[in-house]
Image 1 (cartoon, rainbow, N blue to C red):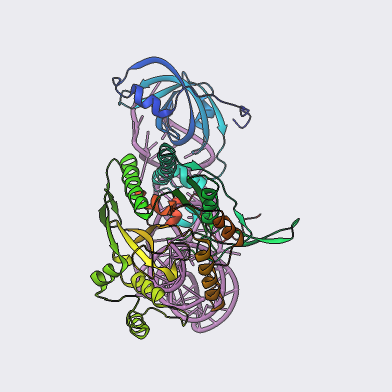
Image 2 (image 1 turned 90 degrees about the vertical axis):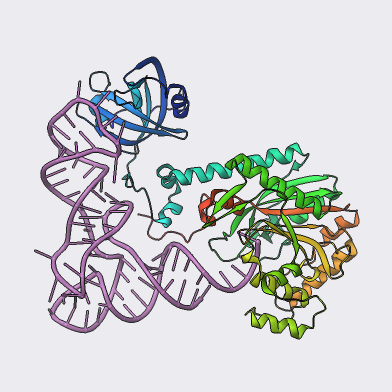
Length: 473
RNA sequence: GCGCCUCUAGCUCAAUUGGCAGAGCAUCGGACUCUUAAUCCGCAGGUUCUGGGUUCGAGUCCCAGGGGGCGCACCA
């Protein structure tokens, strides 16, 4: 058997799913006379002596292999196959007397040998570390893992089609940024040798996408891998995927409608319903979603009645009462945001738009048209988690410069996530950015919602892990 | 970074109070012409994560270190 040469190519005539769909209704014990060619991995083997039954799995499903000694070439070698071996099989579609749709082998070839031992064929792999490190094993022994990543692929594809249909243009902006911007986060730093400059892996594509609106792309988006040098948790991976999109002539209310409609569409396409189970509870993504301001929610959920004009001492007292750490440079807006995040955000279960944020914590958002000190910004919270962050964009270059300078003061005061002045971005605004609204949506968390996974590592094929020890040798 | 939990054969898991380190599956050898996690018989498989300590005796108790999980914190 080890002498059997491995072919350079193999051409199946059917996927296993196609065979199941076409022939599942035939009678027990019947033969179709139809020859098919299939390929896949041998997942189970039942050796009866003169007959061997196998279970072949490809990416579409499973089918039984039926191999009687009399009609199977190289029968002894077939008997010696290992679980996990890849096979190419030619044979007739039949149904056994016991009613199992099968391919009766007339020709077969081994396409790869599984030299490492097969995981437990019933329990699979339960060790999460091994599932993440050896995803190539997890994927073929754990059906739920396969499903999760098929859903992820489907979601991204649906988003692309939906945006394309509404006139959005997909673009690719730089991953290397000379200045990190567009979000408040610690960046990864790398170095370009030929230019002899440090570059930052992007923490958000935002400022480049808005440059493109200046350039005339009125509806633009990017599905962007972004990188943040922060801790790992069930909700955080150092690299993750964001959908960011910008729409000229729109404000944040347009974006809210887009989000609730998109989410409803995705749920219907993926799950067939807008009602989904997450953890122990269920929730409904059906549009429209509730809208409420941060101050309203603070009063509703925590009985905290404050405004930006509330004396700082009072806000600080409330923070210490709710064990929110306070730093000297925090203004009233930051204090209110901290209070909201500590007391309200994780309590919000059903989809909700938390509308209007303090200007102090929103350096890229446009002043609220009615409420001084606030900006037109919202986050959608679903199942206690932030799904997206969006705003009516700040378009005035002078105001943007002031906001950047404010950020530099924050940085000087010790906030190492604060932004720095991006002169080229300011220059682009000086050429004119029309009224524009934009959004960033965490794709990983969106997929978690639709698959019911509670750990971000379960929706990332190869999550960031500490390098494995003792692997060489 | 802090707290709690966890680590035993390739995989899934046992091991009473501190008293001979085991089972199923996989692998290997054998039996079996309709199985469905096939079944049956047999062989082999171990630095119990690592290093110390207590003890006549440690998988088990103690200390230190490592991997992993969860929670907190930071963030999305």
